[in-house]
Image 1 (tube, rainbow, N blue to C red):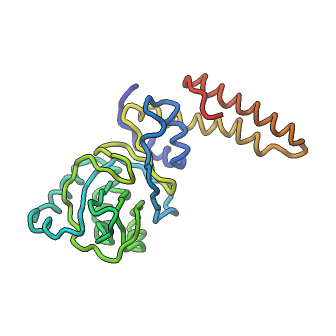
Image 2 (image 1 turned 90 degrees about the vertical axis):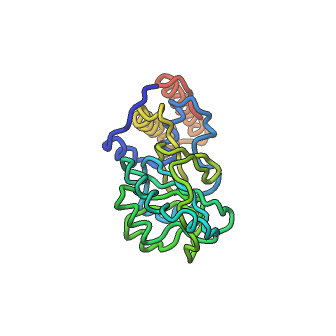
Image 3 (image 1 turned 60 degrees about the vertical axis):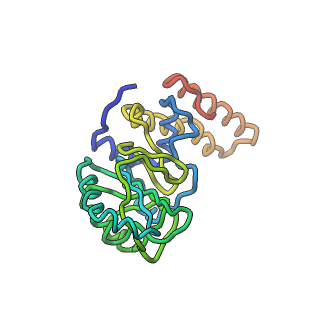
Length: 250
């Protein structure tokens, strides 16, 4: 498939749908296994009122339990910030906490959220902890995380611009991420060119067929309702098959 970087306008349009809806479009155009490219473990959205976030992954590992990193890598924060600043936005910071499943400290807080926001980041996905939730909200910095935590302990960037694994899913720097309260979806580079069109098409397809059949039941017998759903399912599948060669779930 065609490979290209999405425009800012296209990214904004993709924010109009939740992540499951974008997934529905993605599975019609991808050659990847439909069981992949999204989180396999449960995430928690600490800012659900912010809605969807979309951006390109910048990655970092931390290990708040280990004070040696601060001694052995004294320049790490500055070098890490230079890496973040060198990548075009919008960006989502993907943080792998090497202490998982323990929570010794948080990589995030008021200061980190404001710094990263100024560097073009819109939020974070971390399998570690977050804190200063009100202040992160005030900064407009969204967070999907495993838990909250009071302290930061010895939180320090250990390694960055590398492949990380969060919530059972591997993420590479530069991958496009769509995320909300349901979790996150990695949109492979070769699928990006057509993801907006596919999402819009499948959302419209659902509204025109299977969703309306479940709503338009007034005055109908149960037999008529079931028959209508069966017919709508055929129309839904036929539309998807005609557009993308895939029949979808119905």
